[in-house]
Length: 64
Length: 147
Image (cartoon, one colour):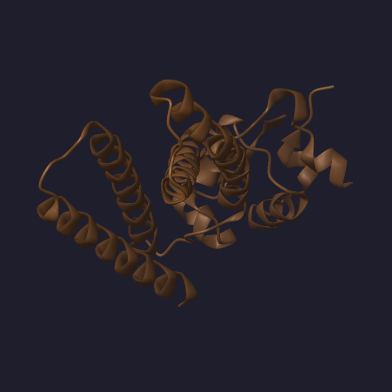
């Protein structure tokens, strides 16, 4: 699974720490997410999409 | 508030363990091979605990969450393997001692080996998974499975 979190983060000029504070997770979780080393739960994916003003479909791309 | 409280409690417990460990070393007259093994394991447990506490304090100071869903998964996974290690050490410690020294291991020492081995396995794997990630490439469809 790929993610466009970094791209959306750059749009709103948010650092990893800013995004982590917004959604109440650790900065390392955002780091792992962007590197593709962690797949978030549905709840976290929704929180991230909400924080970045987008949808889960736009943010996460599944490899079939 | 809860994060701060648990971190303070963790620091208190680590301090107690360190002082007990130091008193044990000072009070011990002769240190045998088995003692060195035990001391090493305790030292590793103390060092990794201090690292985890430092990590928590760092996040607290930055105003970030100390524990999130990813760390919970890391804890569950490390705990699972720590449990397996506990079972194996309960069986293996007495068996191994019997095979090597042709003697039975005392009950207290078996308990100590279970606690130490499972603790060290948990700590090492906790740090490993928290730094390297827990993603298993064959089971990475968490979002799909929840929909």
